[in-house]
Length: 492
Image (cartoon, rainbow, N blue to C red; front, side, top):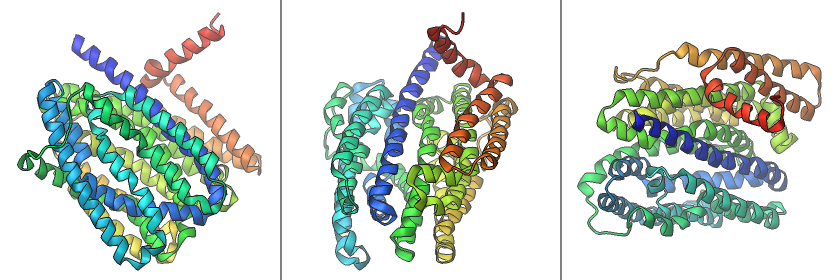
């Protein structure tokens, strides 16, 4: 009993830290995007987004399937410091070897490809993130559930990157400096891990990498990550090649907003994954189901209002975030949001059930099938519909993942009381939709309309959770509101 309560407190604490970290990662682009979209314009932003889409392929080659595999294996060995150091060093050494191969492949690609000729310097700058990620081995901190350190470190480097951005990026020609700040914000903090991780174990290069043990599951995860990278980057890459920087800029604006929301909701996965890996290894399905239900509850409560809001007022959100130039991306954002809603479900089944339980093969099949469908639909739709075609291809490929990941999940996995879990969020979501439609009729001013829609939606959703006595409201929100009211003297 004590163990369960301690586990619950740890998960709650880690969720808070991870939520703060995710909030910081959201606040950063919310500050950066309106500034850079106006300074660089759609074309300049498109250059950086296109460069990132290329780097994603080589980053994937460098990491293989190391991150998810390392979190799982180090979580299982974390009670034994010597064994943890041995496993971590073996995985780290494999990762160093694959990083060298990735950089060699990148050099060849930039040398022989005429299509990338104008992006060479930009891509080399962005590639620094690959090296920082490998050296940092942040998967060890995740496996040890040290979300406090991860949060503080991430926030500090984002403040540093933000300061550099406002000091250095002043005109469209400064897109290279913007790329540098992106590297610092996303992976610069990983360099601190080299010194910090000594508190857990000694991690260094070893020639005894135990390839036989680690390589097969890593390669399996690599195939999965490859297909996921294709899903995440192919639309941007093909848009750049077939339509140009402007369409990439529009699509990138919608994708960035969508990704911000997705990160918040999906952040729970990295909190519960170490615990799920441990419980799946023990075959303790009662504890597994308890962890999964908590994650699903978090996903439903945060995901529903975000999805409804983005579908209801996409143009208004893009206008506030980037300016009038990005109003043309409204339908792209709406389509990507539909895909995101389905990805919340696939995230639970894939990242929280299949990977921790060691059934990455099924997830790999889903991702490979979806990437093939994505490539074909992109090739067909982008020349006709541009960015909207790329977004529609993403929707189709997400449907493929949804069908395959939810197929034949073990009978021991149960999500109890789904009606109680989803009833209040869906009712609140309906209220948000009606309020957003009313705001469109109330005023034509996009700034005022967005402000009214967001503020009113928050109040409507909170009221729905409270009136229907949703468990998340009772256990998480009401205690916080009570403390706030007590400090303000409103409870007297």
